Structure formats: C-alpha cells, structure tokens
Image (tube, rainbow, N blue to C red):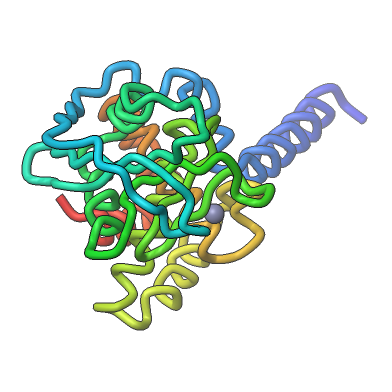
Length: 230
Ligand SMILES: [Zn+2]
C-alpha cells in the first residue's frame, strides 16, 4: 500500500471512531463539571413569612414544623419532621440554589392538605419522592435532588392540562436521538425528571451552557421550557 492511501485509510478510521464516540456521550456527561457548582451563582431569594407551626405531616401523621415562604410571586410551604436535625435555614439554602422558575413546583405541592417541600427522617430507603401534591426529601437530599423531583411534580401538573404530554416527551426523546443518562433510561418520566435537573444546572451556569443543551437535545428543551413556564 502506498503511503498516501494508508494515510487516507487511517484518517477514515479515525473519523468513523470519533463520530461513534460523540454519538455515545450522554447529555448529562457533557455538563458533569457543572453539577458540583450547582446554585453557586443563583439569585433566587426566599423569604420565610410565617411559622413555625406544629403540624402532623402527611406521611404517617408524624410530628413536624411548618413555615410559609415566598419567592417573588411564588408562595409555598416548608415542613420539617421534628425528629430530623434539619434546620429551616438549611432547607431554604438548598432551595435558593434552584433557578427561580423551579419554585413553581414548590407552589404546586402547597395546596390545602399538602406539606409543600417536606423533609422526613426516612422515606423507606428512597432519597426523595416527587408527585403532583408532594416533594418529600430525606435530610441529606440536596438541591440537585430537589430539581429532579420538581421535574416529576411539574410533569404531573402539566399532564392534567395536556393528557398526551408523555407521548410528546417520548417523541422528543426520539427526535433528539441522544440518551440523557443511564438513570433516565429507566422510564420516560425519569428521563423527564433527569432533564429537569440538567436544565436547572445549565440555566444556573449561564447562557452558553443552555445554548449547548439546546443544541444537544432541542426537542426535550423546547417541551421542558413549555412545562416549566416563565
Ligand atoms: Zn425520579
């Protein structure tokens, strides 16, 4: 084989290998270094406007304390089980790491009879649960966990207005042609919740990161922005 031909063959293999690797890198991996710094530059400010009030919490009627907090136009509850060592300031500090639009999830879980963002001593082995009427956390669950659970909450809220939401999310996954993370592969709603977390990280880290996320996963980004709202 002549040298020139060999060089072309080598180059072709190199290009093919690179294309394959690029395709395999999951969305979350691209932003890994930003996760440790999540919330460092957040401008979200929460004001506690009343409390504490003694309450029986929704799970097992355990004793807890309840506060009412606001963040601009958002008004929501914070509830901490008495037997945990978690201080109100810790919970507020974690929530303030989240971008402001995510406070919409706090409001969604603060209706009559709901506990708002609630900290329990234990959740039977889980670190958190998120749904239309609850975001429950164990004491060690940080801001990234809350961002993920906010995804579950806002998905379920949005599904009431748009029953085909999950079908739309599945179409978005197909159209993006890229995996989000191993955990996201468990189910379509985990994919959505994982996306909510990655989006929160990129939104907090600056416009260049959000632009990169939009490029990597345009259909999920567009649909999540509709679910999250302004
Ligand atoms: Zn989840």
